[in-house]
Length: 426
Image (cartoon, rainbow, N blue to C red; front, side, top):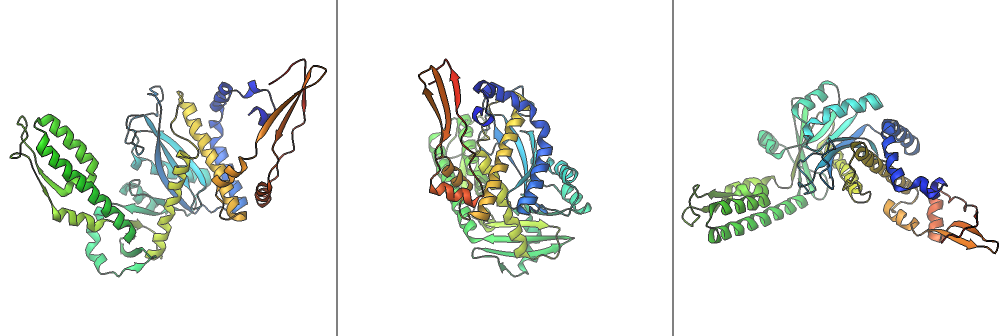
């Protein structure tokens, strides 16, 4: 930082930079609007389709003084850590246009309505299409979107298939691609789409079989090795947690409370009918939308854009190291997320420029390539007891020059030398 700011190292030391975090949140909204405007100019950004999803990131330490750090359901398998919830809105190209930091115990179903109002206030009203996963919208929020003229395309729990089963049987499948078939039905102003992926079905069935097999092996060991009922119930709870929903394919007869476990009072039986009902839904995806005039294949292709927001979360957590959070002040926690958000904005800008001028080259590859250009500090003592300080970067190689030319970028000039009197620096 001292090199970039052309100042003494003490100006850019760690604690001073931490204090700078206390001043950046006030500019969050203005920066989001500015970036969206710049992307519209540079890349003809289209925000008529928005992808919305949520993720969680956890803390190191208890962080009891941070109001939004709460225990909750953790997708990172860190239920022992406090966490915050991050709601992110991106375009189909992956450009992030807004985010919110929420308490870690917030229900995902309560986040949508407020964000819809914020986007309209910040960027104006427009006919936008919102793509969301099935766990986010409620019937009340979808009804509100229909009344206010906001389009949506959302996932729906597969249990609702039973309501449309007979009508779907009357509709022919359409081939969306080599692996996916789709069909649709209309009902009370909405269109429901059923998609079936052969590859996904094979994967889900293999996972279900593996879990049921492990569950049955665990139950067999329980029947032989455990006699104390309390220890037995604890171990049974672990097995059922590992089996997930597949545990419903096995019927159990448990020993009465206060009785030792034996082969006479503990029985289990594989329920083939329940298993058949569950594998019937494997590999399927059920969607609903209030859009009109679009076929099942087009709606399925729209919903597949949802993978871009999942990619954004993956990059925030891996490349940009948004987790874990080690700050102990709430303002700095939110500033930490803001810095990661701005870093992702820069990464997306680089990625889009690479798509236009160096197609096939990823942003990570480009940054790894540029990292080979090193900055060096050279100190030369003189005969008159002075020191010449030279800051120099290594000369770019041919591959660097080609990439810089494609991106229409130039390296800055080498910094002028600095002369220090009566001191030597190592």
